[in-house]
Amino acid sequence: MNMLIKRHLLLFFRDKGNVFFSMLAVIIVIMLYIIFLADLMADAIVGEIPHASAADIRLVISGLVLSGTVAVATVSSCLSGMTRIIIDREEKAKDFFSSPIPRSTLMFSYVISSGIIGFIMSGLALITTVIYLSISGGNFPTLENLILLIFTLFLGVLSANSMMFLLTCFIKSRNAFGSLGSIIGTLIGFLTGVYIPIGQLPNGVAWIVRLFPTSHTASMFRQLLASPVLNDLGAPTELVTELNYFFGITFRFGSFTTNFLFSTLLLLGTSMGCYMTGLSLMRKRTLE
Image (cartoon, rainbow, N blue to C red; front, side, top):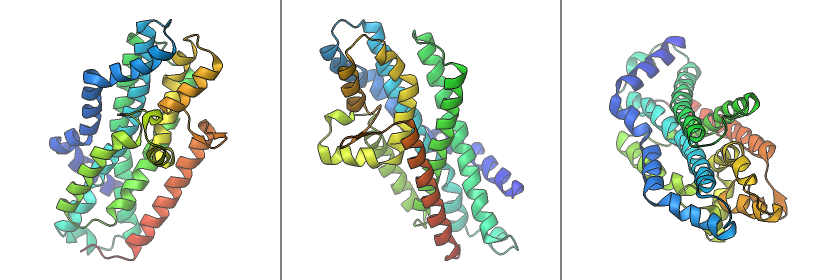
């Protein structure tokens, strides 16, 4: 299996175009943040906490948007990592499929290599985010927070990779896979509350965002990177709570408010469900 994983990784990183497109959604989010997202979200805070300094507000907004950006990266990079399954299937790589390699071993090699790709690319986005926030006036994360950030990254990649694997089970051609990538690339910024804060979305759409697993990845990152700065703005506790809901730092289901543990369990449950379903589907199929 190690040789298969190495093969998939080498083929991915040798294709510079694939590497670029794996981070295209992240690049788009950053461009939108520079153009108008920062001002749009800042207005929401200034209206509620007029005494807060512009630098502190900018730091909060940066933490909110960049946290969502890392979450977006987990999805886009894992999806790009799954490209190898489609290419091998379409090009009829019979040296694998007619060999004595067990089907489960082959499938696990694709899943693991995609997860590694997702962790590396998302990890770069997270490192960039932490450095940017630190030089912008924020405090560098404590050792405990660094561990939690890495843990959140691992869970986010695990969950995103499982969902992309499950979707890939239904795709048979590169054209269809390309269309899937375009749809996900378009929607992911909305589904994670990056483009528009969840508090500004219609109730039905907001429920979809709350239920989408990667939104919880973004929520966990926001709790670690944006929430501490928001809490220090000097706003009343009730207002901070409402801003947490508004920006997707936490989610509210009726009277229940999500927390770090809830999101952790949801991501683990999503991962187990999607992996088990995907592997079950793959066992019933023959790669053509």
